[in-house]
Amino acid sequence: MLFDFEKMTPMQCFEFLTGTVVPRPIALVTTVSPEGIVNAAPFSFFNIMGIEPPVLACTVLPGPDGRMKDTGRNILSAREFVVNLVSESMAEAMNVTCIDAPADVEELGLAGLQTVASDVLKTPRVAGCPVAFECVLHADVPLSTSQFIAIGRIVRAHVADAFVVDGAKHIFDTPGLRLIGAMHAAKWYARTSDRFEMVRPTWAEWVGRKLI
Ligand SMILES: Cc1cc2nc3c(=O)[nH]c(=O)nc-3n(C[C@H](O)[C@H](O)[C@H](O)COP(=O)(O)O)c2cc1C
Image 1 (cartoon, rainbow, N blue to C red):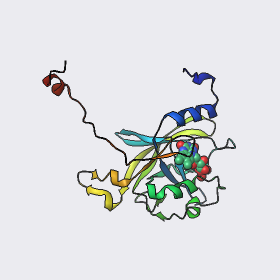
Image 2 (cartoon, rainbow, N blue to C red):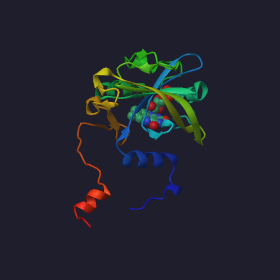
Image 3 (cartoon, protein in one colour):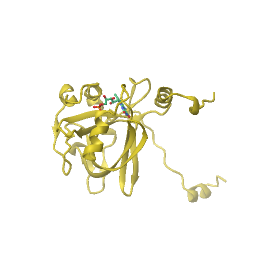
Image 4 (spheres, helix red, strand yellow):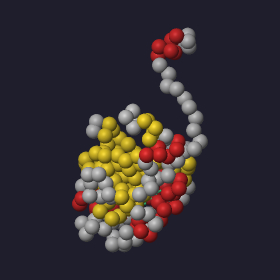
């Protein structure tokens, strides 16, 4: 079946994309408002995007009322944000942070989560998240009213000691992080415990095995 994205509404595009592009990693984004309120919200329009400079990107979609979400407003004013990665044990707390609370409510408190000071940013990270990236806003790419891609340049990263196998070599217990991914219908999630291994082929091996 062929689908014409040029004839689809934004909501239809949302349903289509989130129903097909799975699993998506989840960024639990912390920001601070101009009034000093710490905000947290999950984002699955998220991924790593480059290494020189090291960047990641999150898309702030329009809020249900069409207005800019608190996270977006805070990123644009503070020019910084923290991406905290979400493990299975933090799934329910992460879900609470997506509540459509007023801007003066600290969602982390509702979720029973606490913050830890960042190394260089004023924005704190989330205690208990196995990995956190301190990011300064590298660029904001407007998509429509109240919607933009926040490209963050990673300036610091924190990995919980329990998952650091060899810090100097950047070797981590990645499966041990037990990160979760977002699936479809805005309520399904995936674990990362079902893995398989596949070594990348090289041309030299391919020719050597007379596979051509
Ligand atoms: C798993 C998950 C992923 C989400 N991904 C996004 C996303 O990529 N972009 C977005 O704008 N909202 C996303 N949301 C919804 C926001 O988290 C939600 O609108 C939140 O209330 C925004 O909070 P804020 O107004 O404090 O920024 C997601 C929610 C969940 C539970």
